[in-house]
Every structure is written in C-alpha cells, then in structure tokens.
Image (cartoon, rainbow, N blue to C red; front, side, top):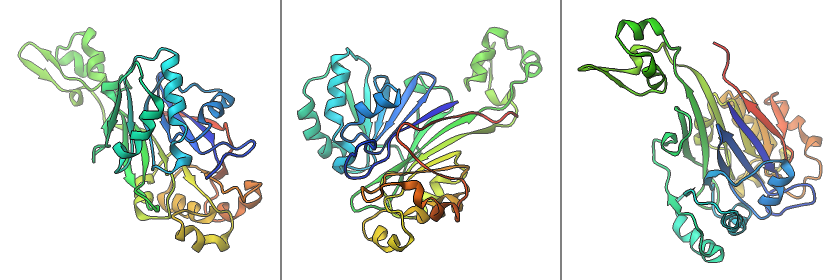
Amino acid sequence: MINITLIGTSALMPLPGRALTSVLLTCSGHAILFDCGEGTQSAARKAGVSLMKTDIIALTHYHGDHIFGLPGLLQTMSSLGRTEKLYITGPAGLADALEPIMKLTGWTPFEIVQMEMPADGLALRELGWPFGAKLSAFRTEHRVPSQGYCFTLSRAGKFMPQNAKDLGVPMNQWGLLQKGQCVQVGETTILPEQVLGAPRKGLKFVFTGDTALCDSLISAAYGADLLISEATYAENEQAQLAVDHGHMNFAQAAEAAAKADVKELWLAHYSQMIENPNAYIGNATEIFPGTICGQDGMSTTLVFENE
C-alpha cells in the first residue's frame, strides 16, 4: 500500500492555513518528498507526518516556492543525527540550483547525492523499498525546465506453490522467487516467472508540479489511482492566463484527469486570489466528476485491488 499526504496547497506564497504545495509519499517505512517550499517542515508537522526518513526529495523545478524549504529541512535532518544517504533529483540545472542551497545548509553528517532521473525511471529496490517500487519523471510545460513524477508499485502474479515443488525449490527459497529473484537448484536456475502467475494490477500515483496542460502529463498519468495536479487558477475565463504562465485552471486539470482516465484527482497549487477553492469545484467536476479540492493535511491510502 501507499500513503499519500498533501502537505500544502498554495502557490507562490504561504498563506494562513495554506502552506506551499508539497506532497509526502510513504511506503513500507520509506518516503519520497515532492517539492519543498518555505515552511514545508511546519506544515508537515501540522499534517502529522515526519520528513526525517525521506529517501528522495523530488523537485519539479527550481522556483522559490518549491525549493526554499530545503536548507532548513537538511539542517533539521543533521541536528537529529541522520546518517543515511539522501537523494535529491530534479530537472535540468539541478547542480546549479542546489549550489546556494548547499552553502546555506552547511556541513551534513549524511551524504547528499544529486541525481538526474534515468529515462526509464529508478527502481527503488536498492534503497530498501518493496520489490516493484519505481519512480520516474516526465516532462512538463512551465516557464523553466520542469518535470512531474510518477510512482508505481507493481504487483507480481500469485505464487504457485505446486510449481515450486515440482521444480524442486526448497521452501526457504520461495520468498526470494516471490520478490522477483532467481534461485539456483543444483545446476538449474529457477526464474520467478516459472512459479508466478500473470502480473496483477499495481498502484500508480502522479504529481504534476507546475505545468500547462500537455500531452506528456496525460500520457504519464494514464490509469493513475491518484493524480495530484496543479490548478493555479479557478475560473474558466482564466484558461489563456494559465497557458501564458505555464499553469492550469481547474477545468484544464480536470481535462487532463479525464483524458488520462485516472481514478481520482486532487487539485492543489492554488493562487492566493482563490479564497475558497471549493466555491469553484464545479468548473472541474463537470468535466471530471472524481475531482476533489485538495486541502492542507489531506491524506489517503492506496491499496491493491483484491484479485
């Protein structure tokens, strides 16, 4: 299962009761933080989640409302004695963007690894995540280099004990096959697919960051269980304004969700001009009924379907 917490929902500046947009994903004791604007730490505490075991900080772009919380968070991790390696990823320009951040942060007792996301995504198994956990990035359209993220948790087929017995696999090695590893029985290599049924439906979560409506978003989000999308502007008449600034309004975010056939859409990254996002929810639900106006501290748990 995957736990998703929407830490904040504001764009550009934090407001009373509305922190800057960021999201925490946790799975089996591991975590990914998507964006880290000013005040992310206090907003996370208010939401009842801890950022201290974050393995990866995934930045969508390098505007201040998405990165200014990094020095403080890294210093807090240091003061609390973190020693585990921390990965930070983002679009083109990561090294230049992080240079002043690292100067402000100072020395840390843990290694910070800057990395570009591989084109085919990053399998997280080596970081201790469950088998089948993967993080990938996709291009988005903003005024600067930007990307969104897709987290997937695949699900292997059902284990077939009789197949394993017939192949002579000792019971103490069945778990390795279930985790996708090969085992050796004498001189024969047993492959996981020899004892597993067809792959079952996994889980998929997508976070856009700042972006205009674009085909790459729709493609990346296709079939997602949950899409958290920027929705900077609320009114339908602001569609062109949104395009001009590399953002979306409620209706455009809903259009992306409908075309991508996602299960549920949470709107976020609201302009400070929007006092009550729910007053405009109809602009989205008339296009995609499964739209919810995100609120700071909202959380959900995504679980595998029973199959």
